[in-house]
Length: 239
Image (cartoon, rainbow, N blue to C red; front, side, top):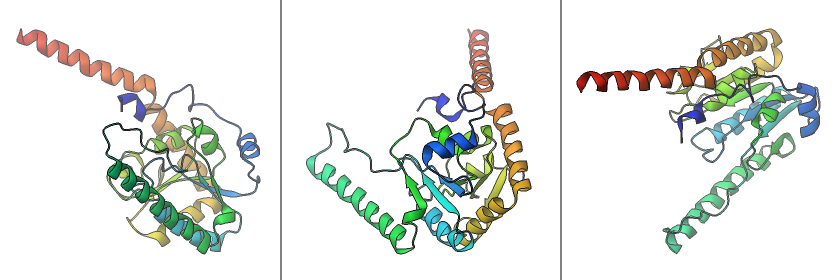
C-alpha cells in the first residue's frame, strides 16, 4: 500500500461526529457499552478470536455490551487469473471453515444478540464515533491505523503489547496495553474503560494529541518531503 494508508486525513478524522447520531444511524441504544474491533481482511492475525473470547467475559460483567465488527463479512471470491482451480477451491474451503468456527464461537457463548457485523465500509469514522472503546488485540506485530483513527476521534484503545501496537499505544497515557494472550486482562481493561469515564476521557484526549502531532497527513507530507530533499542533496554532493 502507499504511505498515505497509515496516516489520518484531517478532513475525515480530526473532526467530531455526533456520538448520538452515530448510534442512531447504527441502531445502537444510547446507554450501551460498545467495544469495536476492526479486523478487516485478516481478522485472525488481528486477534478476532481473542477479542470474542474477551467479549464473553465482558458480557458477564456488563449486560449493556455491544460488539461492533465493521468490515468483517466474508470477502468476495479471489479474482486472480493466475490462480489454479485447485488453489481457488482451497481458498474458499479455508474461508468457510474459519467462518464456521467463528459463528460457532459466537452462538455457543451467547454473543449473537450482542454483535453488529457489516460489510466493508469506507465510513469507519461513523463506527468509531459510536464506540466507547476501540480494541486492537493483534497477536502478530502490526502497525494499527485503527489506533491512530481512534485517537483522532478521542476514543481510548486497548491492545496486546506486540510490536507495532506498543509503539502507538502509550500505556495508561493513550490506551491500555495487555500482555499478549491475556484474555482476562483484555476483558478487565475493556470493562475498566466502560466504567471509568474519567480515565477513558484522559486516554482519548491524549490519543487525539498524538494523532494530531505525529500522524496527520500534513505532518507526514512534511516528513517525507524532508527525506526526499535530503536524498536529492546527497545525490548532488556526489555528482
